[in-house]
Amino acid sequence: MWQEIVVGCLLAIVLISSLAVVYYKQTPLPYISTFAPLPRPALLLATRALTVVFYLVVLIDDLSAGGIRNYDYYTFWNFNLQTIYFAYSLVVQWRSVQQGHARRLNTLFDVVLADALLVMTVFWAILYDSSKPFRWVEVAEHGVNSVLVLLEFALNDYSVQKRSVVYASCLFPAVFGAFAWVGRSSWRDDWVYPFLNVTDTVAPLWYMGLIVGHGIFFGVALGLAKLKRCVRQPATPSEPLLSSYLSSDALTKA
Image (cartoon, rainbow, N blue to C red; front, side, top):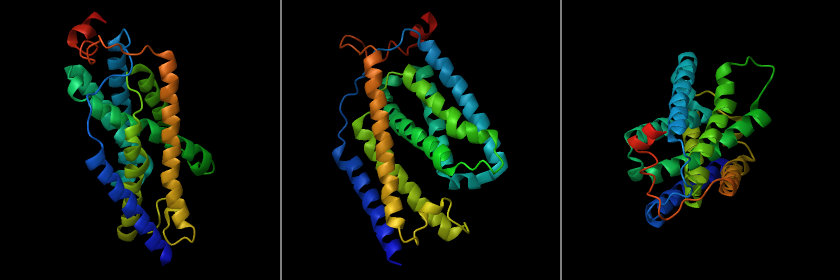
């Protein structure tokens, strides 16, 4: 059907273009923190540690109920990505090696922040069905996690990098769209989300909306970063690149 050809071409264009931008255009510049660190880094460390524990409990409970098929769902993809971010940032902060990982963590957090807000909004505004049984992990994965991500944003010294839009709004959703199509053709009897059905007459519009929707929520994340710049003290040139902020001595003094 023509819809499948159009959707396939759209996904291919987005994927290839995104990879080309990542590979050719994003020349790394020296990473400079946007915000001055908060005076008590131990608070951020403790928050990340407790968050990792919470995420692992949710993941174990959800996997014990749904098994590997949970990975069919975009929510679970995002929740796993958030778990990776919090665990990664915790290890980096604990080992005081932020300077070599700051850009990767900031980029990963940009994706986590924008997509957490999108997933929460879509679930409660569109997908939530009050007539179906409701498990606590659904609240954890569509609400509590977003609160924890916003708390992390308030405490860390990351802004939202415009260059991250290619990951958050193009590459990540396009990869999931392709994965969902493969899943429907291989191991699923239905589409994980009805609007991803490539045989639908308006399927191309849904897939374009998928990309545009991610772009809108990345814009929301940029707006939150602008708000953060209004309330947080900016970094100064004399401040080391987060090294004293995250060093063992700084944590001890905190």
